Each structure stands twice: as C-alpha cells, then as structure tokens.
Image (cartoon, rainbow, N blue to C red; front, side, top):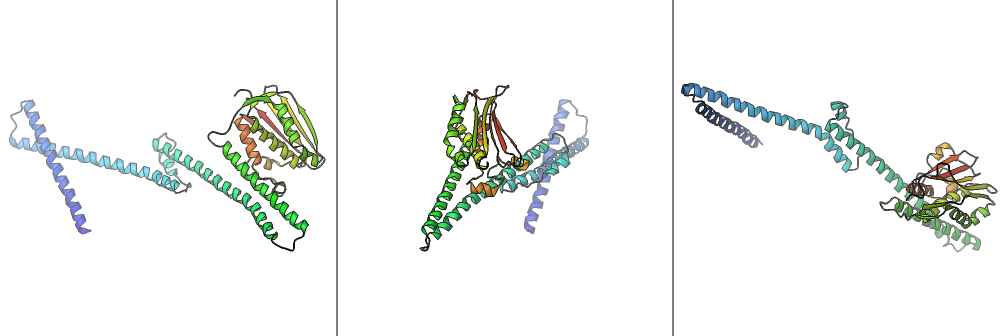
Length: 359
C-alpha cells in the first residue's frame, strides 16, 4: 500500500515537472517569436529570461486553473447525476419508491435539464409502481378465483370415493363439480377475452347491421334465464342501423342483460330501450328493479374482479370480469357507459355511442 502511494506521489510530481518544462519551453518560443516579429533586440539576456519565467509560470497557472475547473465541473456533475443513477438502479431491481426531491431543493422550479430529468424519472417510477401494484393485485385475484373452484372440485371428488354415499348425494356432488368446472372454464374464457382486447391489435371487425335485430336476438337467446325468475321483459327498440363489431357487441348486451337478470328478484321487471338522441348519438338503456347499489360500489364495478356483493356473485358464478370486458369493448367503439342506481331501487345502465357509423 505504501509503495503504491509512493509511486502515485512520484507520478504526480513528475507530471508537474513535465508540465512546467513544457510551459517554459512554450514561453521561450512565444517570446522568441514576439521579439523576432517586432524586431526587439535591445533587451538583455537577463530580462529575456525573466520574461520567459513569468510567461512560463503564467501559462502553468492558466493550465492548472483550467484543469481545476474541469475537475470541479466533473465532480459537480457526478454529484448531481449520482442520485439519478441510484434511482434507476433501484427501479431495475423492482423498487419504485424513490426520492429525487434533492433536485427540487437545488434548482427550485427552474427549467434546468437535471430538474426535468429528475421529474421524468420520478413520474416513470410512479407509473411503474402503480403498474406493478396492479399486476400483483391481478395475480392475487386470479389465484383466488381459481383456487376457490379447485378446492370445491378437489373436496367433492375426494368425497365421491366414499362407498357410503347415497345416489342423491353422489348426484349432488357431481353437479357441484360440474358447476365449479364451468366456473373455471368461464373464468379462463374471460381472461383470454380481456387479454385479447387489451393487446396491441385487438380483434375488431366493424360492419353495418340492425341494432334492434341484435338486441331482440340476444333477449330471445337468454329467455330461459328471465323466464325461470318470472321476470317481465319490456322492450322498446327503434329501427336503427349501426356500424360496429357485431360479435363484440353481442358480448356487451349479453353481459349487461345477464347482470340485470342476476340481480333482479323473481317477478321483477327489466326494460330494454334503444333510441336516437338529438345529438345524433345512439343510447341503449337497460333498467331493472333489482337490488341496486351504493355510490361507492358504482365507482368500482368496472374494475377487474370487483364484486359489490361477494356472496351473491359467487352464488351466481360471477368472476368480476364481465363489466371490465364490457367497458373495454365500448371504449373501442368510442362510446361510454353510464350507471344510475340506488340501493333497493334498481339499476339503469346506459350505453351511449359517440361515433357509430364513422369507422
């Protein structure tokens, strides 16, 4: 270690001596050129050496000042860049909780490049942190939704091994396994559908067709469901042709009407209405006399896996993905969806399409 320090020190001294030699050499040639150019021959050798020495020291000091300034700016730049580098290292390791307030304190609200870069990195960290949280919640929700039916299937399959089961019990257990298997299948189907819709190139094949014909067909297709609950289905459909992806819109109407049937008690009423607004937009209203929902629930119903009433949703086999799919499809069609509801007073969902027929 001492030998290394000695060599380092010797190298620094040697560098200074070489620099002094070069500065004095440069001073000699500069002064000689100056004397020859301006025909100055009266100065004695003594004064020439004095001038060369001062000029050499001046050049040496100028170079050392320049080197110190370069080192100062390099150290200053390194000081300012270090927090950014450390922040990016933390982000690379999955830690998005970074603090770059140092730049705000140093530069205030000035439009300094370091300040702008720090704000961009902080914004990126915030966005990535939110995405990571959503990813973890999504994985957790999917795991929970899959684990629930798997537990039921495993439990009742184990119970079926018993030889003491009656025919009715065996039939009931098999029915439960079948229902839970269908839940898993539906969950997988919805996940694939949502993934497909959120891809860079989602399936989208618009064409012109009659909206009233489509809604009437969907209502008749799910007739057994509303007939089983003795629901009154009031339908008012204007004859309107639209341009949209018919298969995707089938999914929208099936999900919305199915939800109304699910949450409307027996002998209730569901109203499906289609009309053209004065603005030229088309509005589809699906209103029921069901259990309704609070304002808090309304704020979350389009989130993935959200269930305003978990027990009821589970009984009906829901996974909390249907309305997320509905919202995504409507957004693809440049439309929006409105919800009006109060507890025990029913729910009205209105789909308004902003630019139908303009694809």
